[in-house]
Image (cartoon, rainbow, N blue to C red):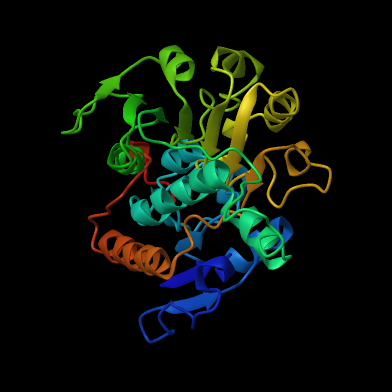
Length: 329
């Protein structure tokens, strides 16, 4: 069986190749990066493609008649035309919950930096500002305490639930907006609320929803207008969930208290992305998922997805349509 990894660099960065060597049963071909123009050529004859950010549309699938399975090394699958894959009998598997703790940790790394500005103060100390200070302490920015504030979680799957638990541990009141009915957590104070109520009542909002047509541009001028002045917004979901120009305007106008993001609408961003120059914004280069433990989890889940697919019992399938698709491929 021919298995092709099309964009494996970020997964293995700093590590040995995590994929098996080719043997009598399987031919593994691994590429660090694949441009859109090279995808079809490199994928010829492949029954399984392993992808992360490579876009797989209907035309590309039609050009690959051997393709039977797309294994996505991420939880999000917005780069795959799931309907087209299902109609062609192609199984699409993702890697859910591989980095729940890693991403949740990054949410609070961003939030705590917005609240306490530790890097700024460390740089100040190293410039000699503390040595020259007449007092035993000083602060360059207001120091924000989280205890007692209201934390809003938009999207309450595994990750949103974990983030809510941590917010509760900080002594915060937790609100959640879930797109489907899910059990309430075992702590108080907690409440499920509507999208509008979450945006109105929260002091901190953390986004944990997939990118869909319903969530694209979710945070925009209209939803920003619902927020209390000084609200802190965190996005570790998908960049296009937030309209960057609207958030940048809200930051410059002082309506939004701060914005921490690990994702942007365009990645890598353009040099003139408005969020890069906006005040009170903190941007990291899509690293929330990138702990060694999370990357090992991705590889383990992906290899298990492939094994289960070969046994005829695929797991983590995100396009149920393939079950009823005609066997024409």
